Amino acid sequence: MKTLFKGYIPYEEKEKEQIWKKSLVVLDTNVILNFYRYSKETRNEIWKILGDLEERLWIPYQVGYEYFKNKEMVIAEVETSLPNAKKDVEKYLEKARKILDGMAKKDIQCKQKIEEKISRTEEEVIELMEEEQKQQEQFSQKDIVFEKVIEWLNGRCGEEAEEKTLQEIKKEAKRREENKIPPGYCDRKKEENFGDYYIFYDMIEKAKREKKDVIFITDDEKEDWYWIKNGQKCGGRPELLNEFFKKTHQRLYICNTKTFVKRYQQQYKENDISDKVIEEIADVSKREETQEVLKFYGKARMRPYASDKKLIEHIRYMKFVLRNVLLGEESWRWALRKIEKVSNCILKERRYERYHGKILMLVDELEKQAGAQEAIMKAMGKLDVMIMEIQR
Image (cartoon, rainbow, N blue to C red; front, side):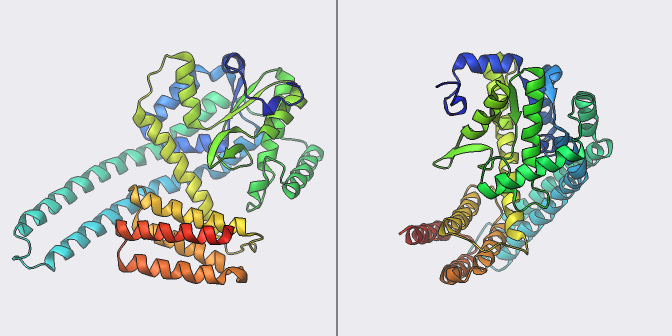
């Protein structure tokens, strides 16, 4: 029974210890690309851990291909993020000045002192941002992530599949997509949607040759890699773990970077990793997950929505965006743009027109009240009502 349904039975602590001591450690593309997005402190903490495991590191061919294909785009994204944030800060401070200018002195006695504080704050903030921008420019010019990738993974990368094998991989990936068999079926939006299965295939072949368990670290947290229960990720998909074991007689452990770092700390008790580092890892992962969703919504060629379940997912995403505004993790301006994009996507399916109208009215109300906390809470309540209506 345990052998037949290995992926459906949680690993015992003894098994987890064995996996951590001897397994191959396989990095997904997004894990490597996120090295560009971390602060120096966080990046060095992760590299310290991976350095301890250097002899066990390995990547499938597809991961290497995707890294070289996307790294310049990620570097450009990082280089422009700070200047854009600097512009936003300057706009918000200028807006604060205009609000003060419109107030009579009798209404606010400390008007001049506040204006002076705003000016001093602006100077300090801009100075800090410019200093960090210089450091980022030096970092991107040298590209120390590339140097580290070559140092660690040269000779530890899978070979490109021969054309015949590659065609078989693509055929199997298509079959899985059509039948919603993980991994890869959530990547229908991609032009080349066989990448996830290619990675899985390579890990199976490597585990068979080396006769070793595999820890697969991926910050791609879609449901075709993870078992999601009540919105919470509960480890790798049982189907994947079971298939992996049947084909290799080895175990597969799937986790994101945050879980990997915390588990390493528990296992070896050598590195005292700060909460700040853990928080940044989670924050970068969450931002990238949001960007992936936004890329999907921003596509001009949207498929018609096949079910009410899909509509509920869109509305829940809007709630997610609004919640991030309340938490201070999302700017109000960008939140509105995201909600409007999702709303326009809903309009493409005619049967959902009435919900599109309700959402536009909701956006108008939010704009009138400039993203006030009370207005956001009220909007989230209305979205909950829509979800209940659809579920009836």
